[in-house]
Image 1 (cartoon, rainbow, N blue to C red):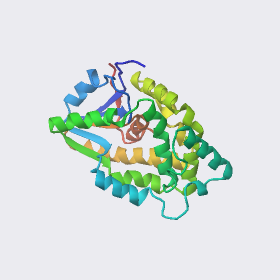
Image 2 (image 1 turned 180 degrees about the vertical axis):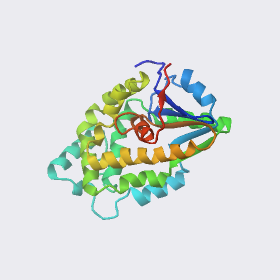
Image 3 (image 1 turned 45 degrees about the vertical axis):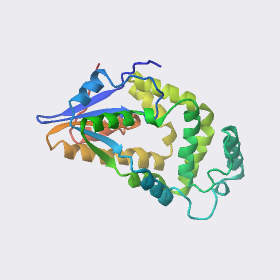
Image 4 (image 1 turned 60 degrees about the vertical axis):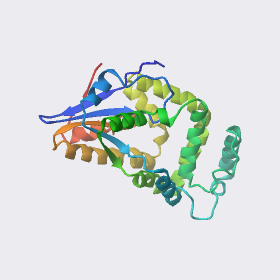
Length: 270
């Protein structure tokens, strides 16, 4: 993995509006100098940072999690799994040095998200090193306007509104792939660093093979964001839009939805 990544960057512009599109990785290891060259030049020229969501105050986030991620049925997480899936899940928890009942009160989707983070954190990945955190800190230091495409409640709601059987399939996929997750993350970050967009898309969306999951977490959101970009293009100014890199690659990318609206994103080579 290069220490000096050059992630992919695109631009859409007309006579008085410029919007840069930058794909982020939510967790990174320390020591990567990606905020330079074309990325920094684009950011330096921007008056506005747009991200997936603005992180709420801790107390507000706790309330949202309690509302949307804690099971209300009275049935524990493990009791929702088949005997084979439960055994595999419990072994995975043990392998990660976690009490097997740690996530019992959680909805399956939230257990999946938390479980997927464990091996990454152990191998040195950190959300505080993620691209969004760095960009938000820069924007705040410069007094830039910061906009969230979604609210925290809305973003967690996408997961919470998934049918329970889809959530369980999501959890089982996480369990099945957990041993390779750190190695997979290393490969994903390498693709991001080398601006290998298609390889990155294939890896990042591998967990979205379920059609409902794919439509909910990727396609519908990209369609909504394309509406936002099209509306913003009607106002003057320069915007730096940073969303998860998986949204900017593949057949249902944000750029693909924008192309349907006659906005063609141009790749910036650097």
